[in-house]
Length: 104
Image (cartoon, rainbow, N blue to C red; front, side, top):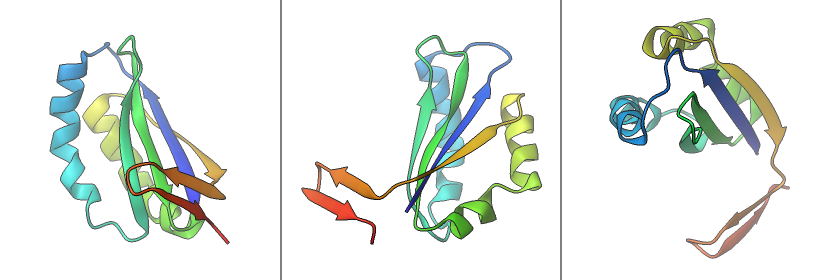
């Protein structure tokens, strides 16, 4: 599995409530993306940085999303270009399901 950390600095800080409103408009587009296991929308405590933490089945799945068109969408929607950092994710602890998932 691959974890991708996406971050972008907002032109103006936003509140948690405003972030929830904005993020809710884009969340449905991530429901059917091949290989995406989970996405967390994130907002820094000062409201100045936003982004997402994505858990993917593979690097190839992740790279299919982070295209120039996707970056342009983020720029248009939030006013900033995103940075994307990839991490290997060999183990996931899920306390909701009670699972420990080892990526073999």
